[in-house]
Length: 149
Image (cartoon, rainbow, N blue to C red; front, side, top):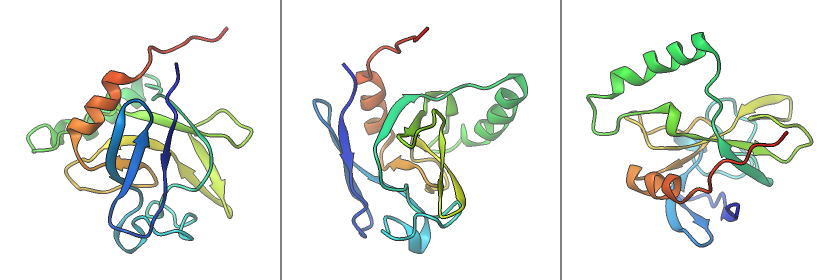
């Protein structure tokens, strides 16, 4: 059974990410003055997640060079209180007529992920959970991947 949930950009420091049957978790989207700010969806790298319907899927790993690049970004975080492991993250596919993990908003491309908070405490157009333990709970409750022919 797939997840169904709701995340509302509410102009507050944090918003509730409600995943029905799993729980409600504090999360945010966007950085600095754009954090959870409606109307700022087209701000590159700093605006919140654009509104819409999304599919939550396992994040594609990419090819060899992509994996090396991702690992190089993860390793420096391993000695922090909030280590990053991109292989755990989800991708968000917006229901915009294309099957991909990015979308266009007013001519600006936006990449879409769901992730636990990292050492920088930022969200670059993602839904970022405040606590890694919340992300782990969602990850553990996620249905097994389904392969389509």
